[in-house]
Length: 168
Image (cartoon, rainbow, N blue to C red; front, side, top):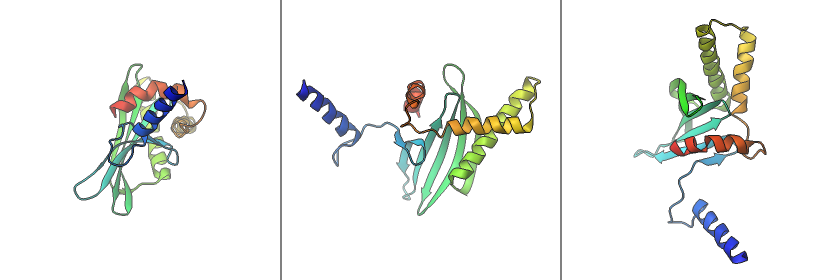
């Protein structure tokens, strides 16, 4: 039994962190410092690197399109998705040109996008709440996306979103 578990562990670790020259399993990578999954990494012919950063909660998904140009990190775009019960639907999208990426900027833009979406839904349903309540709800939804994958309660949400992450 011990040799079987050793083989499973060895195969798992070699697929996640293979020796140089061997292919790695292509799954999103968790970056705890940024509180997001890194996906779709590639390098352009000019040597610039690009990746998508994915954050999610049980209600929304935030996708950042990030570019690393020489020594600068830019945000190329932010997409906001909501669950419709079966899959994700794009509800807001913003594109940027030469805007430096910072966590505070991404949070602020994400909150603004959620706020705009919620305000539109309220208007369509002929309902209203105060601007403060709307801003607080948007902030709460975005804050939920910044929880760590390594937290104990994260597993349930991860199981729900894993099929979508593999498609990204």
